Length: 239
Image (cartoon, rainbow, N blue to C red):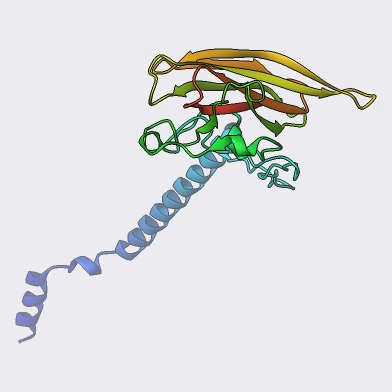
């Protein structure tokens, strides 16, 4: 019986886990692996820190916040007319700088201004037009005038002269620009700064210098007393 048990043990051999030194080899292998992993991590951190020091541009800079905000609202002289944002145009498009003449208060001669005739009122380009009646061409009524206070705030007036004579297609008109300049002694000089002739159906461009003028006067003369002188896109250019 004892011989059979001994023979069984010899046939079984030695199990792998029972080999001498096996546990020690596993421990040593795990230790070496841990050392390698730790070394790789230290090398990565070192290289990352080195590159960051070598390239300072990788750190974004932050601009300091402004201490004050610029003013976005201009100050207007309360005594001056409000500027028209659509000056010189229709439909809200941007146009030349200045204000329309019809935005100013009339100082004298307001009775010589009339509404546009119905057949002109709806035409494009007549939205801000002014219409001045023609004189009767008598000794007491040779011309008509309309005066505006401009208080030396503008340097030039421009407009298109469009005579309107429903009964005379050949009638002509002439518009004069008169600048009134007050002197230091209180006297006023009225200076003719130019003018423009025009004919029914043939509009003409008027441009005149009004620099240093305290008042602007438009003087109208006509061949026929039955018509009007219409000024469209009349603009005053500021100083």
